[in-house]
Image (cartoon, each protein chain N blue to C red):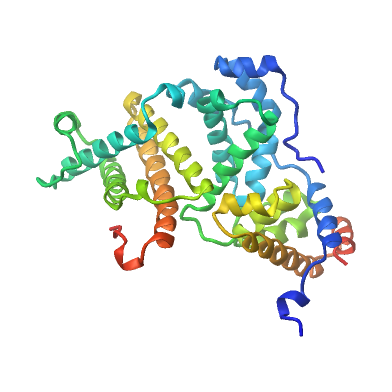
Length: 188
Length: 198
């Protein structure tokens, strides 16, 4: 599987980042704007929070670029920061569930082909949605998720199971649009 | 006999198909580019962490300073507050004397006071000493870095509106830090032993 973050970055770009060159950060923004925003959006279901995560992630890269040793791809390093920034917001005072009033649900009409799926995700508890996304889409192992959340392995596994079941139930009551048909087939 | 949980288990192939479907969803970018805002924040960003003094030390200083400012503005400076250094007291007094609250001062003052309350809790609870899991410790450091950045901007900002926004941001970050470290407290000591917030 391939994460949307899996983008190659050149040694020249990294050198520019280490020198804190604005042009290098502009290039980096072009590469990672959408993956970071999308990750935060999928986990938080709130536009304002996703925008803040995007900004905070770049600020962290600016402050910590010297700590990047190159042991792993740069994209996995920046993704880790983005996940941390997102989880930080998840722990804030916001309600613990992705209520229907969240942006993801109210703005789902902007993505007509995926309305039911968007709504289904929005109705999952934020924590469940986040674990589901990290595991199934970003490929985080249960061990990594347990570490990130400071919880047990069984926590991660049960959240994935619960989220998948709930999503299946929600989609089965969807409106039958094409992607939902695909999804129902996938979950049949 | 199966438990309800095991009966409802979603099999691995089904999970993989769900993963494929989720990955196929369109990526959602910001409604408008954030580059301008990010660029401005980067331009005002503090020095990299490794060239600064310890984040914890910086944070403790900032915390003490903020507590002092809040207390002075509210006229409730407590004589037994050992947390605040003499130098900070002087700086605080100067700030309190020269700082003339504007028309929007009440909201601003409330934010400063809230910031002080949260910082006092963090200091008095000794939460820095609690054992933290890797994820929480990492998140704590990142929050502290962001607070340090806000503090840097506060020292440079002369706009009342911007200062109020920065204080709001500071309070939000502190609340996140309190929540994070409060979770650790809940796991490490009996509830009756924990410090009280507010």
